[in-house]
Length: 352
Image (tube, rainbow, N blue to C red; front, top):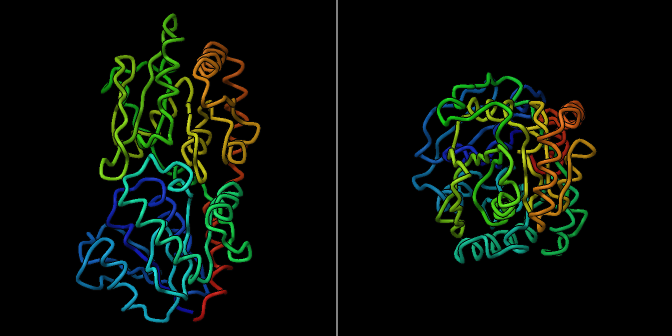
């Protein structure tokens, strides 16, 4: 069986959904029995190498036009996998991974054109696509709630953390931004309002007596997300960082805080746990599903409670140690290898 993969994501900066796609493909590269070909737009830069999976440039467009015109014309009726929320809207013989339904639950976090386009795509996927995969039980329930998708059409696919195992941390980022080991609170993500960094910003006013800094790593796409105002001198924004820098930040942080009010899965807490970083996460959405008993939970709408939980962890070595041990164990439950195996099973629903 030969299966095509929508490789548009390979032309984009690696964030959550691109990471998901890339890590699963690395494991699919070692599978036997199914042949995969990644199709990419003409603006793809040749930076990826796989032993058994070919990358083929097709078409003349880029971005969404490539995905809606060039890609389906080339693939025709052959099977196609789309990893990153988007895909050809009129294709039937395909699998689409939809990571979350934030555009329905928290529309204020996205521009109007973005919301309209994604809602249209999701509606066509619901009607025409062979299967829709999602990344948590929480997200599955949300897809059924907002899109009224037939539960039989929905399947779960795992996320993983092995991508961090092979990365060598770069601790020079501490000196670059004048950070002290164990003396900063780390937060990682885009500045989408759904990520709720306001709670962390508001919590700082309850931490004035503490010798902590707050570090936010990650960028924001102003074309997609409405503007978020940080405006606090106690917060350091280090912007988009390399994987080596990020692992260095995780491994030297006093704790990691994930105040998000809406996620499909929540990969940063899993990454943090896999490095032994103590984790505090909001008590909503899929976060309890991902973090289990390995995190300290807080109400994401109560900044005072968050501040108290931060002080509790930062000032208690025994609590930190317990969270580190539990986090490492919890992280072992998630694997990109599992995700790849699940996908192989789901491809059997496609027509070869």
